[in-house]
Image (cartoon, rainbow, N blue to C red; front, top):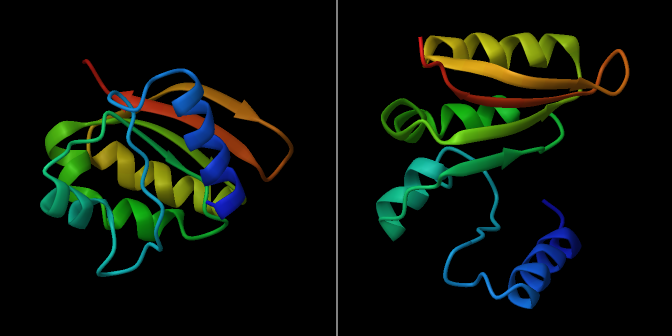
Length: 119
């Protein structure tokens, strides 16, 4: 997430008095800095995860495997290629996620809303 977008989200959270309900995290995603690391260090379980990181979505998902498997937070995921979308969905389907909504912007960009499969 760009710093400007992060600042705008936090401004909106503050304007709506949600500081005690919504926490944001800005940082790079790699083998050491991921959502599983975030959970270990903050002891806070995310309920919704938004991922739009221009091609590194699988890196973010793989680094979040423990959180996704144990807590099943809802996911908003944007992908920018058919191959990446398939790779992400294959990964998430193995963790018992289901697509609840899908918005195709063109033949490459897709916005997916996923949550735990209730079946």
